[in-house]
Image (cartoon, rainbow, N blue to C red):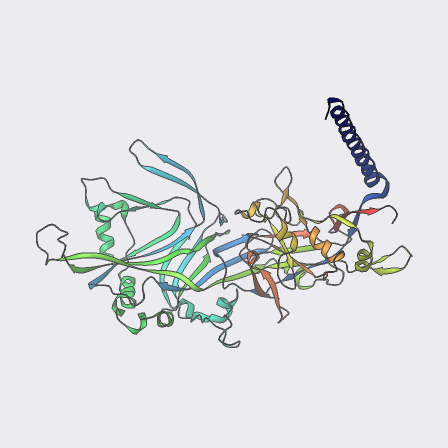
Length: 567
């Protein structure tokens, strides 16, 4: 092939490439003009739902992921008291305590949820950790009492058969269990309010040696109470006045009788026998200040521990006296963990005005205010596309059928729930998140599953595209929550999915999607309510629909869509 033919072929190829590129530019330009300016346009449709609230008379509180203890005074809704009844499980079944066992102390510990914010080491090598509590509410104090309970919490519902787990409710302790939950007082803690300080513990025998510096270990912030005998309390105080502890010989004797003296008995031989013998413990909170205090604590890291000493033969010559037949003292412990059936008792005394409002809700036309309150509280029901519209032929038509005929390309569908700032106390007491769900099944909407932020560990930053975090003004007062439900609306309007009613509640943690049962005072039919609402103590009031609601804050579903101009 000569050079001339090669040049001709190259020229042809270059010309073809330039032609294709030029045509592509023309096509893109024309296509953009057709789509953007000629054949299609963007519009907005506003659908006004029916929205109203329901109050719970009781909610399921067995099986909660975490528990609340104390008293909380909501600035809008009123006061709620949270108590806890729980079974306990010993760390060893059929335990042996050794020869001549003596109970030395009983330690109650409830760990708070906390975050390590700073660690400082001084010139002597002493490490000090600073913590911040993230789940304590209220500035007052409460009196706490811990009782041995004699109420048996069964595993299965006898009315439903052996396969159905027994469900316990927020009102069971106060209305159904009776005085047996307060069988024997074990601990009493007055003027309690959680503190963020780490707890320092002296290691064994350090407080008896004046020639060496005490060895100190630390644990994270917790409620920690130590029960010892009268004699031990006197001895500890004499050796180290700063280490003084409350003695109670009667209770030490009681725990000895209940546990150490039962070694080898049928009561401690297996889990079922133990649960029937030692049926559980009951935490009772009572108000002793105007405000009260509430703590969201880690029940999985709570315990009652029995520390005891016993005689053993020093076969290893641990005391280095060349005698392996001596009797020496050794120590052991039996830990009781909170497990299996755990029930949160909740007693909410609603503000009278709100109670009257919730007792008379207009389920046909909807309400002007929506009342959302966690715990034994209230939630809202949203019913979309229930009205009629005048169609293009001037005839009255179901809104749902009209919208399904439009065949719109839906770009976004969202609802802004504006906070009634005149009715709430804005600021830290407002819930950061609200939660929407299928009222029939309790399941999340498809938008939750598709949210790219749905796997975040922190509930504040999780599922934020679908369930927007509270939007606040410059004074940090809550303005609104925005919930996007684009895919749900596409499925209802374009795919023919059922137009189900939606539930709306506050949420302590939007990552918790499991559901519980609740009952309203006037109905025997159960309602579905998310666990994340039950473990929330907070409440808010949102605008619904109605003549007195400011137009710009009236609840509506905003549908942004694209359609052909020929339509």
